[in-house]
Length: 301
Image (cartoon, rainbow, N blue to C red; front, side, top):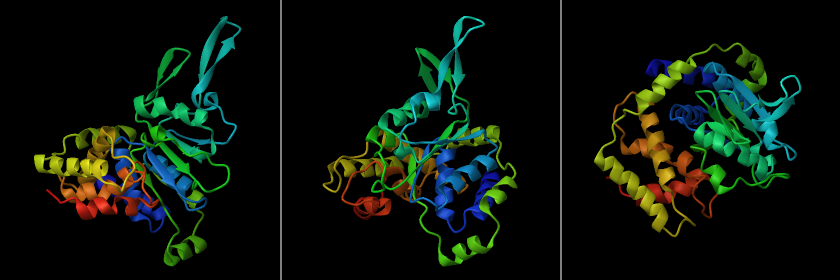
């Protein structure tokens, strides 16, 4: 399984150049059954990363462009009257795919954003009292532009909390930007990619991750991190129990990717910024800066 994961990472790194850590975090998020939020300025490869992962995982992929006038029915689907059978028939929307790219999610209104809440949490949607199951596996990769840009609606905390991780791509280094400038078009390269992990293989890995061992000492360290965020004056509010579960789940996936069977403190530290950065409100905006007090002040058990 680890060989398949490494092949997946290697293939993705051929498309998104110089972003090995961000790609590893993105794959870790998916292996942990989580949804991913990519926040950055336009044009740095957010959409390309989502499309690359969908192609390598052989998943049904649908991009939904969020705009200020998009409606929940445009995302979920709607019931349409069938004149032949004299009844309403539900027409599934683009949400009924295995991987969804919610592009520029914060350009839509809160009403449209909330259409994803039940889907992300329960892998189902309810329309007019009838519940419809979404395909498995099911992932949402959302992109958002920085909040200071024109025409954005900040994601509420309840929506942010549904994302297991948030990452930023940033500008490429001069070396990799030169390769982008003289190299083949990224979209053409994506079309040549072959499936590395089939959806069923992905689900097998997800199941295997649940058996990764977590010691009592590691749980003590995890709880110490959570309690620090709640007691410290660095943050307006601390991590919730759901955030604690997210941190532990992501750390187990990171452990599995390293071909180990037990979580160590370094695994928690590796995923902490991506898992906790968007859940903690502080004077800083950078995820690494947000979690820096935790890493420096919470002793390792």
